[in-house]
Image (cartoon, rainbow over all chains, first blue to last red; front, side, top):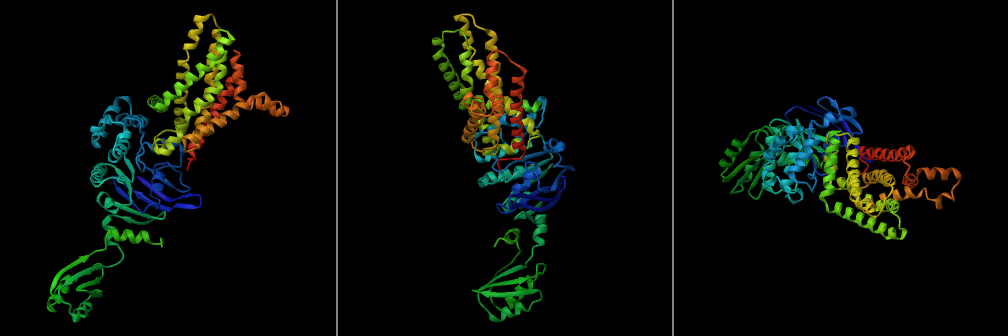
Length: 309
Length: 238
């Protein structure tokens, strides 16, 4: 559906995207994750043909976006919400959606139904006749999404759809995105990890213009470098205990500070029952025992910190 | 073509829905009407010649105010990103904005029809000359608008767009004035005279609409609309 090959984009001396390649299949919901300035917006702008690549190419449904003759055809396959949801402030919600619909080539007979459908889908009925400059940030974002859906595109691209919203609005937009993703290919960008984790079937992490990770949220967690930790809380410090724990198979390191023991183990090693037995045997008074996996959050911070220092 | 019209309609509506549109129309009518009437009774002639003679100077301030926001505001607010990712060719988008501003100019001129109606009450006047005057003003205004739109497409700020358009149009206008031409070598003087927006306007005002003048104005419009489309294509403002 979307194929990106060796994409490079420069602004003067600054390389915003550096040899980015990936492929998206029909129906995927993809989260583009990265810190601010990583190149997310640039990548999305290249996908929607707002910018032209310096090197490499983007193919939408097998059509090369560099070919001017295909430009209109490609553009009408995509619905796009730019960052900050820019809208014509002096128009009414309904009027604006109608305008975008007509510009997308929807005919006179159909336009009313399409506007009704997106107003319904994006829960905008209440604000249908409101002037856009009177809307709250959450409603603006919904008008922006409605505008991107008006011509029923098979690809929807949303640049930071939840930035600047309050938690309630964020959940609403997230639900809406999940709904949209049921029958379309969706790409959204975000610098908030939990957002992507909860809405996307695939995550692409970019940093400094390059892809540093690509996979399902679970894949990324599994392949995370580093080990799992077992945290043990005890009521009495017993010195021989630590040596016995270190002696267990699969344990890499064990440390004890103020009645808290941290045991590092390999990522696929399960030693919790042995640890529990040893602690109880040495009469240390077991209070709690928990395994902590490296979270996607850790991976994200880890990956995006590389080369930044 | 259909999409060009949709865009033009939307732009015209935004002129008519904004206070700026009414301020511009008000200033145009008051300024041109007042300046014309000042000399009208002194000259004592039932003619609109004096009115059209004012147009180059009055429109110099009016039309840049109409075109200044066309692109600059889209870029500032980010809506350009929506507009330019819609399935239109750059040429269609540029043409849509031009048609909107041109229609607004036509509306302004229709509002001045009160003047020839009044003249009809005062005596008989040369209808052909009035018609030529209106046509000439439309051509002149179309050139101003094309220049103003191009300037707006290379800036991000409305005020800059207004002032720059004013300067560019002014230069295009005075390049044919006699005090400049007299001090120039013959070849440059001929060139300046033929390039000037004023020369061709004055020749239409004399009541003769020649092909040469029409070709000139149409070329200026096409040239600047082309530059405009080019600036948009290259996303010049980044």
